[in-house]
Length: 491
Image (cartoon, rainbow, N blue to C red):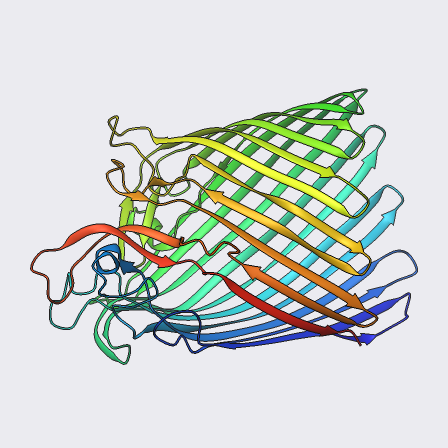
């Protein structure tokens, strides 16, 4: 990272860049390349206004080993880092520009606004089922998209007496050209175009938020209104089709907070939201049930038993109405039905010394599909227990770093829990030493060399030499014991 403007009270600018090249951990070389560029300029004015401009560029390409079936690993045909179709892979890039302004009107009122633009390109080759659909050429697919995203957000915040008011509005528009799903062979041969079209989706929104304080009580009502327009031009249709739909949604929310004293706070939060479906789902449903309502509520406490310890607890509930899902791998729309989730969360933050910190978060969740019969109502890949945490230390005789853990319990991979996605417990460690303008660092991922799966799905597949298909866990392996070193020089 390079500071382009230094020792200035009114402006600063910096430029950062990163380039990564690796063959990865897999048996088939990944040939992974990635470049990141980031720049930011900030100008501060005498009236406490601030203007920021930031731009970034990201580009990457790779070969992939994909999701492999457990049966091949169990039989010793391939290793955990092997591949069935080594021609999977892809490339992607994104260019971003964001301009933001913070401007005080007076001591009680200020405005913040930002405008953004992003150009996104994506091309991915995958093979999830191998030779299930096409026993001759295989089932490899290409997903490709060229997307432009732009929009604007603005908010006015005003403090008056015992209240704070916020008024906001904005919009976002997504436009894609030639969004494609095709059947391919060995990445370079296109056998059939399954889906091809242009997508347009826009969202205009506005909201009002208020915070009222009455002694130990804080009341926070708010409401947001969203208006969506959807359009899809199907380029594979025999005649021109420009399908469209529109929908609006009102989402009220209410939060109540009671501060018993400086050490204990109780809160209740609830509200309505929604899930925004893919445009191809919207036009397939002819605009019906396209913004399913989500209702959620939290009841919790914030407790500070000691000056340097904070404990958070919460009971929560979430219900999502009928949702339609666009399955990009197959180009089809599937209903997922209503779901209900509830759980309890615990979070702890403790500053043991001036330089040593401990934190931990745990969450237990009970989630089921509402309309399915008992035993067939599991939500695939939804865990019922997760926890993360660790120790961190900073500025101790030039040293900094920490030890982290994450645990994910085994979970159902399908609706009847007959296929299980295995959980894992993984630890990471890093340590850095700063000497003048130079920082030396070591990071160890998966300290105990645990065999864990990063992604897991219950998938039906058939290999080229198999007569019948098999439904079982297909996975991509998690990183094994891995050491990275770094040397950073600050100019």
